[in-house]
Length: 516
Image 1 (cartoon, one colour):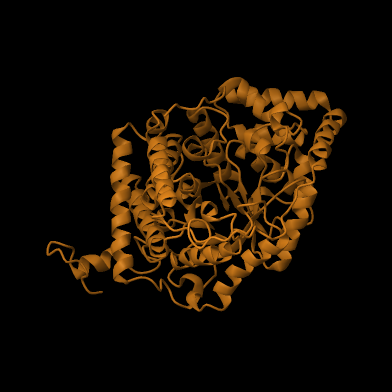
Image 2 (cartoon, one colour):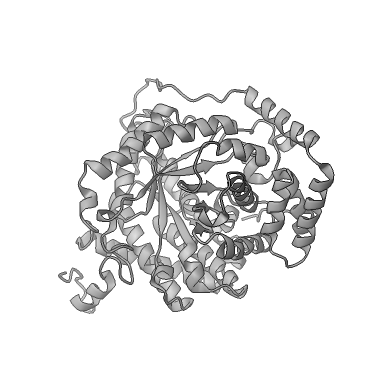
């Protein structure tokens, strides 16, 4: 490729060729597979979950019938925060932004008639990831399956909750212990399970820039890998089970460059900082979701176009898995029609655009390569700043990362308010016509039915066996035993998610937000 830098001290053509490399080879700038989508398309996921387990199960089976190749489960806020549906703090939130899961009975209903040995399942769950993974394993056992055959991902990325999203329970260091327990358990028992999906998505949704999304995601990732190494785990084995979750935002070229820069930077971090020698442990494997924060309640059909552009950026950037948002998600959870349009967007890209026929079709473009370099360099500078603050945990505890995200979000909103950043249908090309699309409505009776369901479970179980299993979780939390086997035993004894979370709360306490 010709030298496109004006600076005479810029890298030579040979140096640039080494930077860009070849698909499937270090530093993986151009993709992690030599043939990319010519060999295998990205996994088409649709993030879904609402109301009761039975309702969500019907949506999953509908999506599988429409051509989805992997499930992605959304949980309601009480489930994410470790509260049962009948807890006072759960009032008004049961089944609203995801599915309510209180017990093994709910999980069994959620996964009814879904072949867990053939379907990959991604679960967007963090503070209670250990409980949901245990429930998934327990349901698979009910289906007569061994844990070893299960494939999927638990997001399990608790550190980004403290800086961007807020669904945490325990303090950071206790939470990190739970994460590493999951790593160690899965290394032994679930060899094809992705033990963590380190999320830049929520960091970007909170208002970060593209450079900050990469840097802060990798700051968290560095903390996880170091914690795992400190626990005696092998970096070459661990690295193969780490995945990432990024946002596909509006700036088309910047997003393509972001994914390429992230792949290159992570390969170097794993090789140079952590000594990973296995190429698969150096590779950045990631899922992408289009940007929910860019969707507008006004003129919601415009969101179909936004999502298509963002999805194309993710594909040109080399994603391994993709979710397209529904056009109506600024107003409500997506209807079946909106979910189908979102899925068809992926299928049109895969089958009609011709883009998958070329490996890294954007590679070599002057603008793309220059942006790739700049994003990598900017992310490195931010990582150095975090190191200077004492590392990721110290930076979170001091509010360093939180402040940076908030300042970026403020500047971005100022540009929208002033009209400097155009949002079509909002601050330009607006109309007075209200949105006229059908919205998904959650039955208000879902909450009362779910409350009755969890109370019936408590009344019908073997209370002595349940209490014994919960006591074992508490004892393990106080000590050094791996928590996962104890949590599996507790869910199989029909302990609820809230009870298991409380057993750990009694030892770890709860986190109080840093004032930034």
